[in-house]
Length: 383
Image (cartoon, rainbow, N blue to C red; front, top):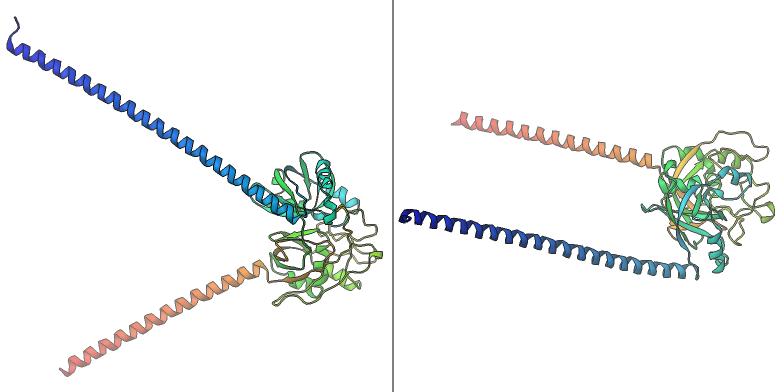
């Protein structure tokens, strides 16, 4: 028979084993509960994420529908928007055809033309389009023709530069193209990126800006326009500014003056027909293409181009305007480089003034300490 001590030992072991089994079962149940709770939270988070995405999609669809309705109303009942693949335009071939204002004209597929013609878009005049990258950069362009490959939009270098910041290698990607009826521009404020533009253009600022505007069909705030400051020498000395219209279309109107401030007034020169917005060659017309530095008038002396990039700071009546058949008042403000130099000078002067004030304060404090010490010494001597 087992002794009392042995029975107690066995009982203790049984109790210990039972306790361990109970604890193991408790831990197992707790682990399962935690796993189930974690799974439930994950499912709730997924459901919340799906719901949030669904709500965002609905909100995006609502905003897109609202924007479409606003654009359709603005465009007098015309709407088109599609994402197309951007490819470079053969600008040399376009230049050989004498196309006017070709620096910012894009080539679109025939299906886009058919869609717009079905809505009678030509009744709004020359066609313009907003181009926007997935990153949010945007600009506006005119229409060259509807002959691009389906699913693509052919961009000239100036449009690509304004979308991708001059990174020519990045000028191939998706672009959302939206038909936009643009108001005729009435005012533009330019800011050269580097100093020297005012001096280079001199008294021919109006002619220089007119020649640059004649190369484009639209402007957007934030665009960078390349201007040849040497054109003013030729146009000014030749007795008139360049026109993109045939001689029979008449001469350009010129508005002098400008807004208040340091600027120069200019009126753009026009002669484009409204029509369907597709330009025909302009025979015998001098092309003001600063990039090529050519297209001189008959009898003009050769010149070297003086190229400046100018930022479109402000436009009226809206942030994007048409340059077709309009007179524009222009202002040229000090360059970005000059503003930066002035800001640096002011900052330096502020630092110098602060240092001078600190030195003067230190000198006054030292003088006061000397006076206090002298007063103490005098008081001690009298005592």
